[in-house]
Length: 231
Ligand SMILES: *Cc1c(COP(=O)(O)O)cnc(C)c1O
Image (tube, rainbow, N blue to C red):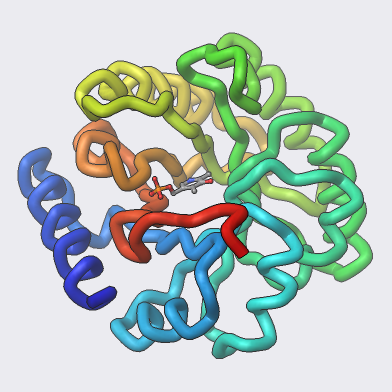
């Protein structure tokens, strides 16, 4: 069943790549497994997926030892500074850096482990009141500021687009984030390696790919609906 979901998502990704003349290799599928049990993650792993996204540090901490070591865990949700220690040695990337204090705290934990943590800057590209993220006009200054930290490396931008029934409505936001990404990339800031644009979820990943996403984060489309609070 999950296999069918995954095949459909894969087919949609390939078609989106074809529509805009991109190679399938330019787009990484991150299967968002938040709230889902390890048994389901194993099933998706069995189909060849290696990149999984979670939004709670505790969930990564708990699932990490249950899964093979070649899984690449992505921290995609809002991160509190006191939780960084649970995940610093377990994740391949933190997609949700949205404050200097958080960046500094990640830098500090990464230093303790002698690593450089790849991070993305979360941008509130649609300027929604309810969303985390740096405002687009502040993004370049923010990247410059955190680029001075030695144990993180900014590798791109991430956004959570507005919830909508019509994915086309988010095209403009994806296009704007791509523009911002290219602008910052063109500045060639030291210790910044702009190579990832993490955008697009179940409802809009195809549009995001058409607009340049290099990482799409798909949860419901692979694992089905999430149920909260029924336990
Ligand atoms: C939950 C989540 C997703 C996946 O959402 P779906 O609509 O289920 O695909 C992607 N990105 C972030 C940051 C999330 O929290």
